[in-house]
Amino acid sequence: MMLADSQIHDLAFKVLDAFQIEIPSWGFANTGTRFGKFVQAAAATTLEEKFSDAAEVHRLTGITPTLALHVLWDLPNGLTDVAQVRTLERRYGIRSGSINPNLFQDQEYKFGSLCNPSSAIRDKAIEHIFDSIEIAKALGSRDISLWLADGSNYPGTQSMRSRIAWLEDAIRAAHARLKPGQRLLIEYKPFEPAFYHTDIADWGMSSHLARHAGPQACVLVDTGHHYLSQNIEQIVAWLLHTRQLGGFHFNDRRYADDDLTLGSIDPYQVFRIFHEIHSASSDGLELSVAYMIDQSHNLKGKLEATVQTAGVAQELYLKAALVDRARLKELQRACDLVAAEELFRGAFWRDVRPLVHAWREARGLPSEPLEALRSGGYVDRIARERGRRSSAVSSYA
Image (cartoon, rainbow, N blue to C red; front, side, top):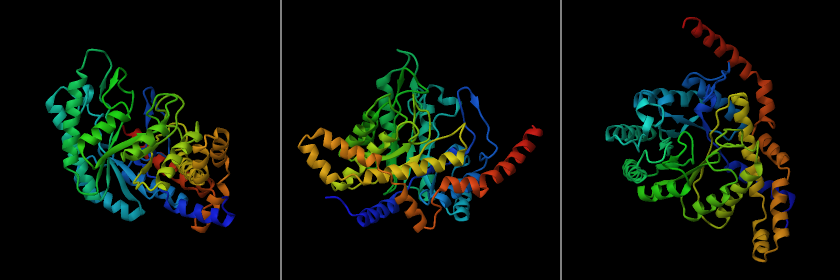
């Protein structure tokens, strides 16, 4: 049965009130590719600048209240830095989100971290995860997100089975350090920086490790971490069915882990992913799915790209929520392929922007956050201030 306009309005507001997406601290800093780095004058170079940028995005969008932190980049002194983070949380009204250990930067990790043939290096890596868990406890952060660059480039150079065993032991040990309510999110990636084999290469490996670790471990899906044409929503359906979906790192890509703004290449894919999540919720599954933007932009302005992605995520999440799932089930069971597909596609093509604009205005937010960012002067101001400071620093180098 078709919903009346007032019912759609009420449903849309309920859905939009519930949707939040985390933003990453590293998304505001200068980052690069294997070939070089394009520096932006407005890029954040301190943790306070990252909190300030996050607060501006949240002020404009209303849906980004938490900031993911990378331990070595944001808390280089470990627990000693927690007091500063707490001060910044209060000052900017942004909470610390997921805590991300760094197991790929140190020179010792050339041949792996948790999977390194050296037991001393493996011990160093697991101690860093333990420290990250303690930081998360001190900051009241629920999720510790684990991504490894571990792997190898040449056949025969590493024992894959030995590395599996080392991984199992390490992740189980990390799980034992979690307090009730905390989660260990295990991410996967098929290649890069390793190109022959990656130690956690797909959702099956992450799923196995999560089961091996314990009930507080689950799988983290990065939309850029898949082979071309892979059916990510089917992976999502399996993880929902097995109660192992912990969260997402959202971005878009044309070839590999391109870190493009969400929906810039394939918005229909994101819609399909959100549909699976809404469908599982409608079927009564209890879900606790963490959404996070994972993008570092070299060409687009960093705040503009973050605001763009947050808005697109919001729109696609709402589109998927407005699928008439009761009618879709009837058509699926009847194998009425054309009607089912048209109903599904119709929800995707629906223009939900008027509903999103109405919600923003009702919540005291600018109806067009990107326009408000561009006209508000924040980016121009920080570009001047940070650019002068960067020039001063470089002149004394």
